[in-house]
Image (cartoon, rainbow, N blue to C red; front, side, top):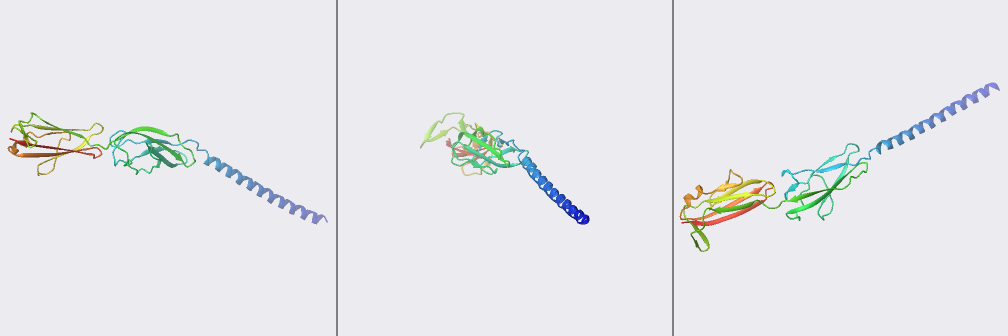
Length: 231
């Protein structure tokens, strides 16, 4: 009888040990899962988003300029960046969007923010931007007034001098070209000024038509045509 009691006791001991081990394993898994959840939820800091300057070295955008951001997110990772200009709807940013074509030349308010993979969303940030869709201003000036007119065409003496300026209030003048009558298009070495004085000596007694083209940083184009006759 004592032998059977001992066998039963040993069996109960083994069964109890197994149950205890399984319970401890389940407890450990539960703890690890909770700990893992805590790790996933430790990111409570929202990203920071900065609007990047363009090639104008300011917040000035041309019609084909991409709108890009720098996002600082050090924990769970960036999820999405959103932005809107003026009253247009919010758009998701992927660094490829250009200035919306329906916006005209002028100043606008831009709003933007980012979210991270832990669900944190930064407060909406704002900046003022300028959309530049205008080419440089081209100004032509003669050193003297016309001596007469012929069918509305000004007539100048043979010692006429012509100066042309190209200026841009927002960005730089990128390129300045001219074409005299049916001659070749010349890229002027100076991007902001042309002195035609010497170039007009061969046009005495002729009709002169000069087409000047100026391009800014964003390659917005302005064109000016000057027509006259040299006596």
